[in-house]
Image 1 (cartoon, rainbow, N blue to C red):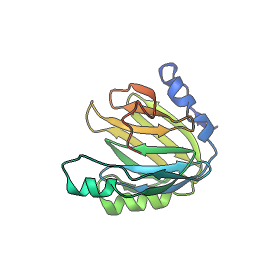
Image 2 (image 1 turned 90 degrees about the vertical axis):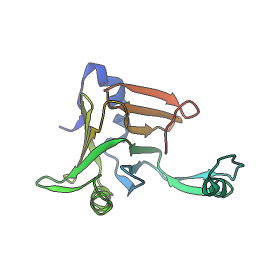
Image 3 (image 1 turned 60 degrees about the vertical axis):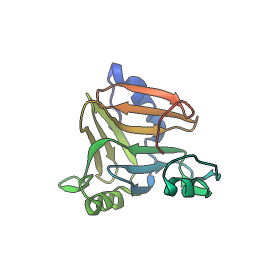
Length: 176
C-alpha cells in the first residue's frame, strides 16, 4: 500500500505530503544547477511586480525592473543542493548530472501521481504511480536538499543533516 512511511522523528515532515498523495505532478522542469521543480494541485498565477534594486550586477538590476509571472501549483516541490536520480521500475531515466539527463527525468515524471514518500536519514524517496521514483541524496552535510512550498505560505525545508524547518515565506530563504 502506498502512502507516507512512518518514522517518529520525520512524522511532521511526512505529514505535509499527505495532501499531495494521489495528485499528479505537472510543470516538472529542470532549473538552474541541480534544481528540479514539481508542481502539484490547482494552477494559479504568481506575479512578481517590478522593484528597485541596489544590486551590483547590472543584469540583476535590469531583471528587478521587470514584471515576472509564473504558473505555480498549490504546492511546489523543489530539489536544491543535492544529487537526485529518477528511475522507472527497471532502469535509470535521468539525474542532476547533466542538462540532457535532467530534461529526460523531468519529462518522464511529468503527469505521474505521487504515491508515497519515505525518508531514511537524509535520503528522500518519492514514488509515483506509473513507476517513477525520484531519490534525493546529500552532496555534503550542510545544504538544503529540497523544500516544499505549502498552500499556507509556509515552506518545509529539509537539510542534508536530516533536520528540517517549517517557516513562513517571509522568514524562509526558500528559492522558489
